[in-house]
Length: 148
Image (tube, rainbow, N blue to C red; front, top):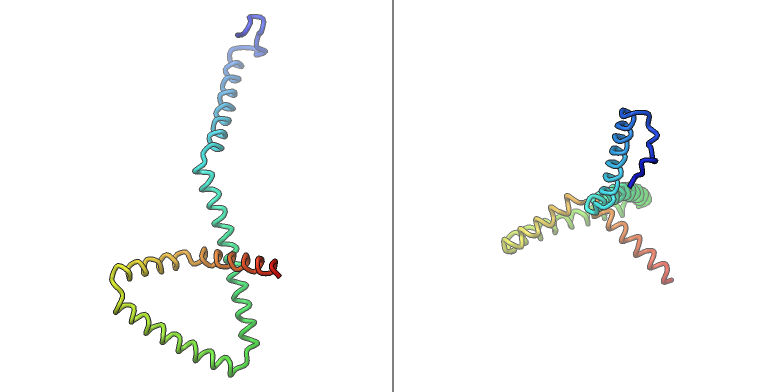
């Protein structure tokens, strides 16, 4: 409780009103800050967004590095080897097309639908998949080197 001796230092009622308004504003900001800290779902979403952004950036770096390494490797490969690789790639495409046709002819409809849905999901999340694959490869390499 306040004693009558505890006089406020304010000069008048208007100054007291301003102090009360200022205290209310500060209290409101404090409550908002505490609410934000306790909102685990929002904090988790913010963290997920940040991690997704980092993964996307890392995937971009890995993609650029892979493209650079591919170009370097192609430059070092002799022409006869390139020709043979092109022929093998053509044959692989042909066999893939044949296997795809066989799959369409023989697979049950529900299985085909699930497979198509999985392929669609993979295409839509290609960057994330590349980043995860790159990270898994780096982890594997690190573990493999530690064993040596």
